[in-house]
Length: 394
Image 1: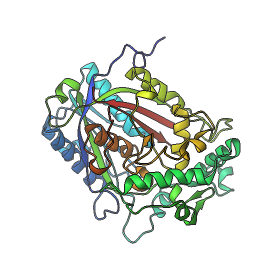
Image 2: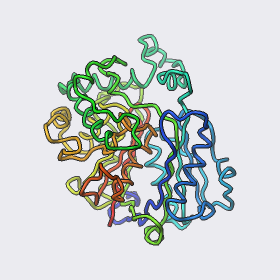
Image 3: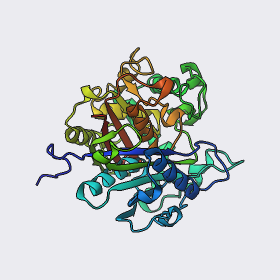
């Protein structure tokens, strides 16, 4: 049986017409619900439509259960044809755009707002406490990992990274090359939380989080909200912003988290979601101009580059550390806003928002010359959920 959503004959014919971003980072005194409302309002204004023109709403939260589908009431929306809460962790943003596009293509709705917001940071509380407090002790057979103090995403991703290092000889210098290159992009991003240059020496000198991860191997924690407006490509052409078409998508959910897995840390679902998205978009990697990866850790960006096929499996370390490959002057334009390592951590909305900004040609000092095709990735759980979008300016 052929899945029509991945068949090369299927064309989404949808576009992202609006982008709404609240203040991001260490922003206190506001709730996730308030961030979400503002983000949708800003996205509608950005598209040049009224909030009342929205007839579909997809919502998602981070670790703060601050709102759900009841956000409809806060926005004053009535008679919606689509309303749902979506949770795929870091892959959620790519999934929401996919579901919105499918609903529009089927005729269910015309204009869908997709929003994600969170408020994990609390004033006078350590940043590291945000996600530690949100976790819970494992039970059942999974409690075995707890006896080794493997309790958080940091320690679980550290295991995956170490597996990659042992299998392929990947080094911390190579992880550091990603951190340094993305910080160089962030120095040109007025929204970035970290805007001072980072050297490889400073990367190595930063404190350990969970070996092999230093502080600068790990993403930020941020408060804020981001929303996008998805509609038909035809309607988007009549609205306020340059059209950013949704050309293709793919998902992959390996479902082997916490189990014996010979591929753990070596291969991720991006190896499946990437080709599916490229096939639907009728494009290839050599036509991709900009790559916006989900970079919860430097390792995640590296293994994603391998799985998408930008380099051979196991060669990611050499690839990212090749002089002239990454950074603003590099051959491959990766995480051009600084990514989650240096700009802001809005889960999958971080790479998606930067992809939209670049595709529109609105990135200012950091704008890349060629931005005809943009690949966007999302990663959730401990390499459990993956989503890929291909955006374009046809």
